[in-house]
Image 1 (cartoon, rainbow, N blue to C red):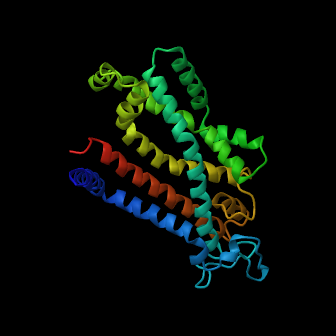
Image 2: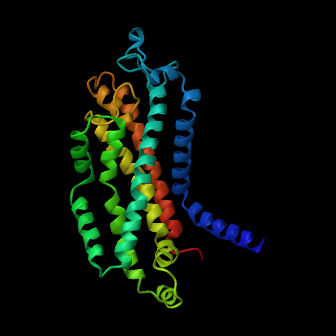
Image 3: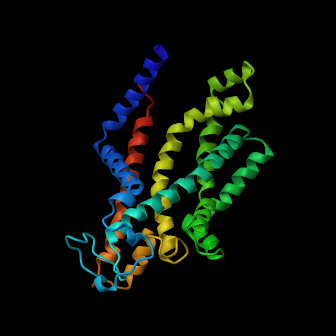
Length: 289
């Protein structure tokens, strides 16, 4: 009972620090709304058929109205419905990319930081430096261009560009924390290397890692949309936001709504993740007092 009460107090203090920033609450509400829309897109979209192989040339290029709030595209598909399903693809991209890059990047950073004077630490960090030297968008474009354009290959291309940033982040902190007294004490009592890395050092990196994960969600969505914009990401008729912008760009400025509303959707998601990341950073900035 005491342990449970202590945990509630700790989480309550974290939430108090997070909630003091009004913009963080706005970001949290925004992302929560986007996630709900993505999960319920099939049921809340006014025209769910527009997310697939659907054409209605009699209603093509219709301006925003009561029946089509965001208007329709060049094939007569409802843009609002496609934006709802586009959120689903964007969040799936984020989930896949970060799930396969954060863990390896963090582990490599921990190993390199703890064994900072070993040869394999130097190898890990020089390899990370090579990847970091190439801008993520350029690296993703290079990888995607030699693969068959698809959603899966777009995720692979973005993943290859992302892991070294977590390695460098954790390495920087772990290489300094390893000399702290509590780490030395753990070594003196015979704690294993893995215990020290994952139980002593890693928790002290939790705030920075979670902050970066949240901020990277927006960057992953932006790079994924960029790949789709140039035809290297999800292919038609997948309702991807980047593809929708590219298709609508040919009809600017007359039928502006075809590109503008998907672009605004990307802005909203990225802004939401950035505000949420700022709140998480503030929450961990000085621990829980």
